[in-house]
Image (cartoon, rainbow, N blue to C red; front, side, top):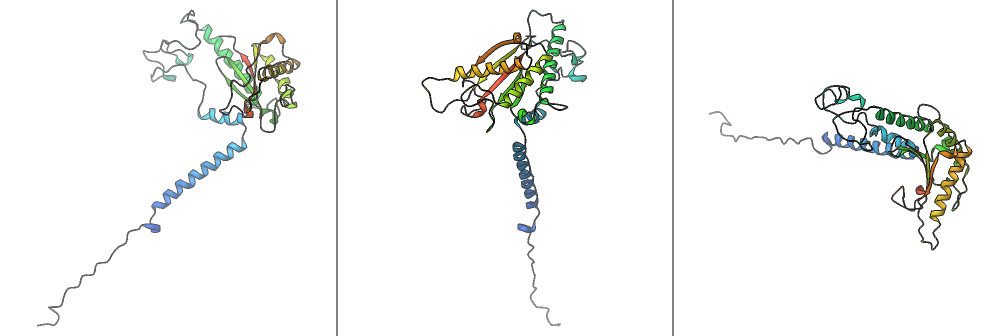
Length: 278
């Protein structure tokens, strides 16, 4: 017999360690997501610090547009969702869709009368043009960069609202009175010239920040009206026809623009180009 035939069989089992810990690749994906999120965060912080409120509003409107393309969508395959049994006309671009009332529509107006819609569109277009010239969209603005920081605009059912507001260290009026600062004089004179391009009536409204200490004789009402009246004078000095002033109002500290009613941002003047088609 040969030697070793009765020797025990030895089986070696090699332990294979998986690629976990720092040897794997899953952490790289998580780290890449983290770096991307941090880059987006720092980009957001930079934009908030490097842009004005008016510019931030423009960026927000770009991603969330407030200008409707058409009033309704019929859900068809045609342009703007038209060309189906629910549309009144085959051209949905005209702004008509399923027979539903719209806000501000005159019930006595004929459903097939497009003159009212044309007048409304022309009115909105004219106000948009004023807004574009004021903010320098597509070209240079009529105002200096320092003055533009104080202005935001919005188009509402009432008309084009031009809001002028205080900034930290840069106020529109001297503290606790209605004496305008140079930047306010510049804005008022420019508005007086700019609004001559349209014939809309104008309303001016004054707002103030709330005081942290309640006073027995509250001067908020008189001061807000006085500042609104001072803006009227500045616009008239710039060429505005006084007969176009529809109203001058002051609401004191009753309508804050931000949640903190004592914030300086609440010190503001609203100049409204009223829509004449409603």
